[in-house]
Image 1 (cartoon, rainbow, N blue to C red):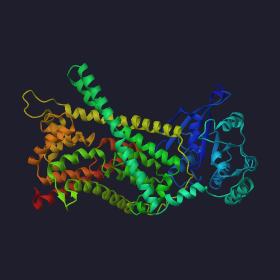
Image 2 (cartoon, rainbow, N blue to C red):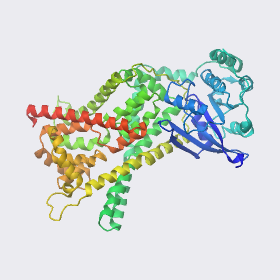
Image 3 (spheres, rainbow, N blue to C red):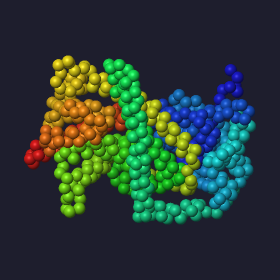
Image 4 (cartoon, rainbow, N blue to C red):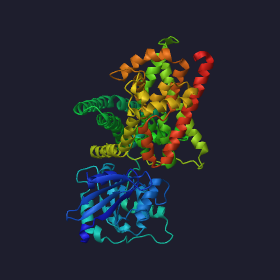
Length: 619
């Protein structure tokens, strides 16, 4: 095989916030793919690059690392890939060390560590435009001479900002020798870093004036938290408000497609499978996409701007008291819209322990899918009246359900902190990068990656399980002389009747138990499922709720309604959420553990609620 036909492997490596991923996007464009490294949830990005001379390159964007002495999973993966020790990964031929020109004090130290490996290396001094604006002078020739490796400047956020790097790669990468300027035995790396800075860098101030001015307000213990509250409120509102028209459009499109396919096929199992199983299943997955994209648009923009690390810094002390991290705040907040994008957003949490704790408590946030159930039960059983002359009693109950979810999440994370084997504190170490405007191209590429991850990996699991649920709800068919709803004769109906032996102590009747089964696909489905069980026909969930309300208010006790409300605070009723936990943790064991502890919380909290309410006369 022609050697030129074998792509040369380049690995982009550097500290977080050095512009490495922006440079990767500049080099590879759309010719990139995202996966996970084998056995872990760390993202693996690889793209293709064609040189001017026709040479092909495979470009790997390694996770950000501060040191080869790994303190996190990301750093361990980067270290092992660089050294060629990672299973299933070919060692890179050339390292491209990306450094932030405005913060060489931190980045040079890592470059010196990489040089000591003796691998062919090129140094890309990125963000040179920002350095010049701050009056920072960098003698690239002196750096190249002292480091003993090629040094080029880049501006990854500008068109053709990587041209010098491309030209240097084309000219020298294939025949690049090992570094010529390695440190001698016993040389202190910090002293060597200071020597290089004094020799090649003229920095008037360590931080930019605009950064100092903004940080005086945005990191203030009072005004900083107020500013963060405003930002989070806007994100929270956007995820709800902006996504609603798009989600309604997806729902309408799914309904139209289902009706069209249903009308084109004769009645029968195939018609039901395609309409109720495949189309409804895919629609149930895709409908979450607008929320995910809006959420990640904000997260990516905040991360690119340099604000996200500051938000984590502000909240770290409060979150640490509950066994979480400052980085947990945004994923948990976004889980109020839907736990799926919230769990996916935990990828911004570097510490594996804090990330897992955040994933496990995210389902306790009250997602929007619970609202139809809450609205039905509160409207049927809680009187519409004013309390203390100001507050609406139904609104107070709804607020209490939200507050119970938040309090439970904090308690669960605190308990996990006490029980875990690693009793040591993991302090939040953050570099506060310079503020900068987000780059639209990088944000759009990031959104495309998130969309593909969600649709391809999570969607397949959800679709398969939705089809399984369709089978349970559809077979066997009701006999010709059936007097009850068809669902009563299906496998799901039989399971519902059998479930009453387990759920009777919670006050659940067989109708509720049956509704819990299709509710696995999505919590809000429980409303229309209850309507089906009660042999009602309704065009949508709102109509179902209106018809159901008088029926259940007459047929259920207050204790049963309160028990079911409490059940929905905790119960892992959403397959989408469980599938996302499996995907993000890469572990069936952790997913099953999440399902088990949530089920246990739901069962015992509902049991306590029902028995107490019954004892007080609500039964």
